[in-house]
Length: 399
Image (tube, rainbow, N blue to C red):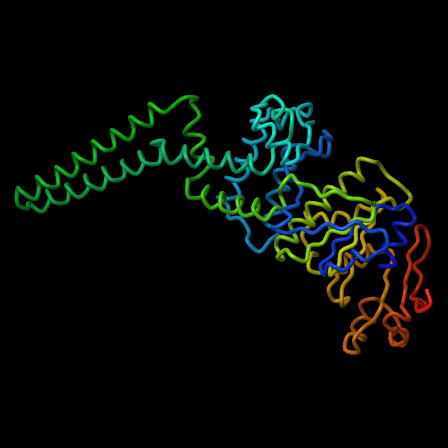
C-alpha cells in the first residue's frame, strides 16, 4: 500500500488491480467493484486511430487474442466467424479497415447508446464506435439469415436427392419387385421436389449477390450460435460493456475479486492495453507518468507475445508506464520478466523457497534469511546507464 500511496502522492496515475478487495484502504484511493451486479466494463471495440499502429484489423486481432487467452479458446471456425462478425459490425458504422480517416469515432456509454436507440438517432450512432451488443445483434441477424435462407437447406436437400438416386440405382441392379422400385422412385421424386423448392427459395432470397460468399465466411448457423452464447455471456458479466467506472482520484483501485479467473484476465488485459495505448499516444518520457499494479499478478502472466502485460514489460518504460507485480514466489516470474524489471523487492519468503529464490534472483542466501515480513525487506535497483546494484536490506518497520 505504501508503494501505491507514494506513487500517487508524487503525481503518478495509478491503476491497481486488487484480487482481494483490500487496496481500497490506501489513502486517497478511489475504488470500484467489477461484478455482474455493478456490470462495469470497458468497450473492447474502441479503436486506436493511429494510422501506423492502430486500426480495425489490429483491434479485431486483439479481441480474438483476448478470448484465446482464456481457458475457453476459440476453434478455427469460431475464430473465422468472429472476425467476420467484427468486420461487418465496424463496416455497418462506416468504419473501413483501409481508410484511417474513418477510424475516429465518439465513445458512447451504454446509457448514451440506449438513449440514441430510443430516439432512433441513427446518424449519431453511426458517428460512434460499436459496442458488444452491436456484435451480438450482427450475430443474431446472421443466424436468422443462415437458418431461414435456403443455402444450407438446399445443399442438404441436394444430398438427399443424391442419396435417393443412389439407392434407386442399387435396387435396379438387384432386379427387385416392381412395388419396391416404385416406392424408391417416389422417394426420389419427393426429394427432387424438396430440393427444387429449397433452391427456389434461396434464389428468391438473393438481394446483394454476396449470399454464397457470406455463407462460406460464416461457416454455419451452429458456429454462430456457439459464438452468440459466448458473446452474450460476456455481455451479461459486464466486463466488455461500455460502462466505465467513475473515479474520484488518480489512485484507481479496480476490485476484481468477484470475477472468475478468465473474466479477470479479460478485464485486466483490456484495461492494460488501453493504458499502454494512452501512454504511447502521449509520447516517450524519461519519467514515470503512470503505474499499473497487479495483485497476485502471476495468475495473469504467460509467455504469449500478444499479451498486453508482456508488451508493457518490454515497451512501457520508454513511454513513462511502469508495471508492479505482487506475487508469493519468484517461481511465478519468467526470466524475461525479471530481466526487464528495474526494481525487485523481497518482503518475505518461506524457508523452503529461499534457496530457489537466491538462484533465480541472483541474491545471497544469507541476505534473504535476514528478510522479515513488515520489518526488513531486500531491494535491488537497476538505473538507466548504470551497472546493476545487488540486493540491499532496508528497514521498513519504522517507515
